[in-house]
Image (tube, rainbow, N blue to C red; front, side, top):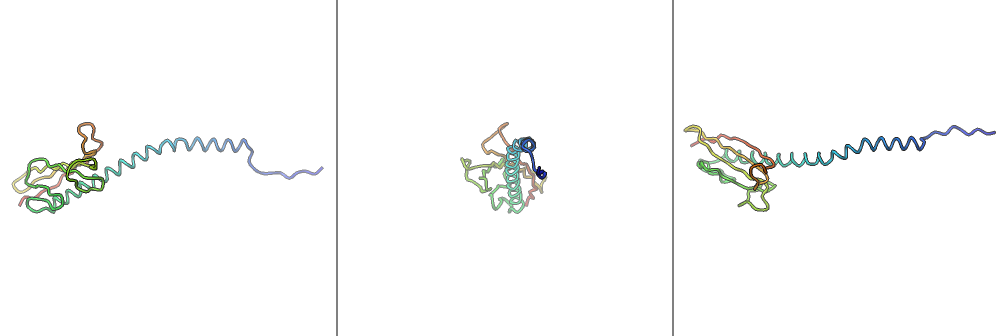
Length: 145
């Protein structure tokens, strides 16, 4: 009688077990996908708001005696000034459906030669109180001339 050579390979049971193990490992990873995407969106929004606050601070630092150049911020006003921006950081004339961020700038005198500018960027722009999703706060020195 002729002996058949030993065959190598995986049995059906081994294949089913391998697929089950891989499935058990992938299911939790797929469950984390929405959490990762939400975190990425939040980080992107916060980064854009920080860039906006930095641009406003730079505009205040390079301002003339009374007004900033880019955003026309009145550096002598003790009243809170509010500006609205779209998602690309472009200044809008008013809060409308296109606005994504609200920047509130307050100039406070701290000495005869120095003021401080407080910049608060919040989103969404029309939210208030507990409905604000996030905010960025910055303080910039404003020399008096």
